[in-house]
Length: 203
Length: 286
Image (cartoon, rainbow over all chains, first blue to last red; front, side):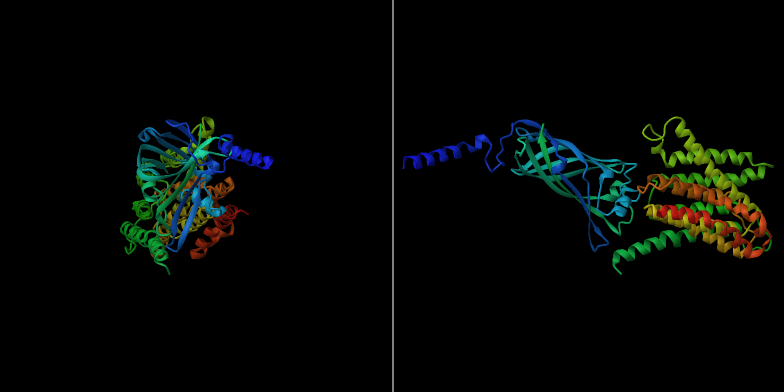
């Protein structure tokens, strides 16, 4: 009887200490440093895709696996935050070799001439608890356009390796003609939907 | 047929075929006046402006790379117009034409593939050598086409231009530069117009200007496609294409030189097929 009570009390004590020892299942609690922090983009957990209509029949997707950048996140004053991304144009893949060569060539992204796509934010504002309004410049194919997008904060917390992370997601459309990518808009629609899911690791 | 597919086809028909053919036909007909009884060899500007203006119309409708191509095209027309003026005032070997052609070709190479002339690609002596070699290949091709045009008025050179540009268009498709292929297709259409007019009046010629405009436009598009393609084509694709026009000289010797009429024209131009076919097969990956 005493052993069973003692065992139950010990179990209860261990469970109550679990969060402090890092055995907690729930890793989404925000226990970041607060204030301002710099997050480096984690390419392994970041996905950038582009989607466009193909002859009005279906959708064609392209991924950009090589992405780098930083997110300056200021919890106390979100307007002092910023996002900077750099994508290697030549890394794009649609999982079709011949089509990839076409996309990287002069008809579309012209990756040899324009090896990078960049985004630099110019302002960040909070819309609600989970949403940020971000304005910034996209530079691609030798042209720059200012866009305003809504970015959703997915969550934050310590990852499996113990580092603190923040996750973001956004979708928005651009007109590729504005960037000089103007080949056959009848075949591949001029409006391209960009889908970004990003995770940053606090430095 | 979906609306999009129809739209693509209509756009190609309009900007690759109809409008360029209309522009080239109008200008060349006005310049050469093939209905005239007497021969009219002095209006060489018909070839230069006809080919150049028709190309610019096609490029305006299609868009495409290089972005500075319309400006290059306008400059090429000017160079094409300078050729007959120099031919009138100079005698003997065309030193002036050669110097202008060399300078124009090297400037064109630099303008079309500027990004290659940087520290990360070609620098110093390597850059100079590339510019010289590519410029010389262009000048040599123009020189051959011009002198064959002077020897043989009529259909030979327009037909040769058709065959060369068809091959160039095919190569560009094979190395995944479809937009360049369409733009070269415009040149094919324009050469076809000149071919039709040359059947009407065999005395017309594209010498002293027309061949220069053709060569410089064609070279610009092929150079751009070749160096920006992610297919990374073998250099032999470019070399065989650049050397192909010189096969026309084989038509000045042997059995072909003894032929006459349309048979001689077809036989001469057929000499272009082996090197151009080799270029296309290499681009395909064989």
